[in-house]
Length: 461
Image (cartoon, rainbow, N blue to C red; front, side):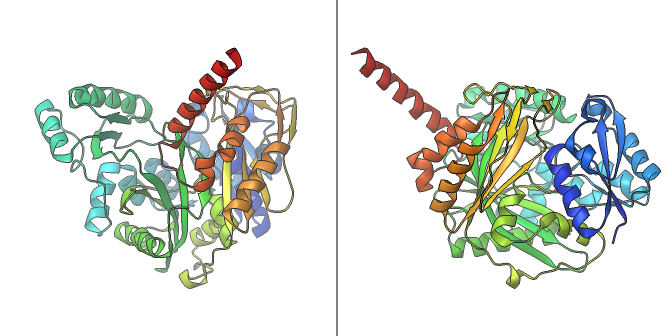
């Protein structure tokens, strides 16, 4: 087992890793930027190293400084968390070349799965169903692009091959607007990822986003831990996740789980990852992408399985076998996670600033993963997520009721947060029935606007 692990991240995920390390008896090293020196993850770690200024390119994405910090402190492993360098194959390769263990898949696998077009080809060869679309990236030829689009059929999604987080993506419903959409997606992809390669896929407007948590050791054991439904999104950014999915029955779960395992075998995957699928209204599912890291929403899986995914990641990276088999994975009850962001709940404009009072919710079946505290200054330079509230109930109705109660308890004064939006969604009949797709939030806002218009007209009379 490792003696010391450096966490190449910040915020709640850094704290999450530190907690797992403490329980395993492993020393921890926190890195931070100049403005994060009073952050909780820095205070909780055994050692800390400032790796640069506020700009994440000069600190949390600064590979030489991070690897130097690991070497100077004697860390024998690095956990990347999610975001920043977590899916950067060059970072993983540098870490490996320095004789330090990267807690995740090897850099070859990260590179293969990070290239979405290449990943799709690998999945197709492994027998995993993929979304109909172009074979590889689009060429620099308008006529060929239009011909490919005609073969795929409208509507179409233009996607960045090196992308993620909704950037470099465009939905096209009018053939005449396709080339402009490709051009703008390429520009956004180049700015965000330094790679302007894009490809196209058939777009399913009423699909669900269902992902499977997987984990594999270096001894040939690969297991999935069931699914998470992440369909409540805004601009491809997840807001609410739950497990199990209201749309997945036992037979579908078995088939999707088998496909997730096939995806792992097809690429030679090790450590924790997530295989993401699109699920259409007919019950057909298609591979979207594979995230080669721990996910923001991993706690919902932990809540329904009782398995600590971070500890398991560390054990697997240390060469140990998985501590459980597929048959030993048991699901109990229902879990929901709400991402609480420092944003205006209507306009979604960022709301950084000082939290004048912070009080997390509690009670049975309530978990809060957060790096916030009273008088903490939420910086504008990083992700806006303040906390993740996760609840577990015996069934979905109980989990919804528990989440509503938890969100009514949470206090985050001094900044705006998305808590009011989450409460509205949880009270919505469509969500409560589980009849939603990735278009849910768009339709929800439309229904809310129509209701306000009716209420205004009635009050005016």
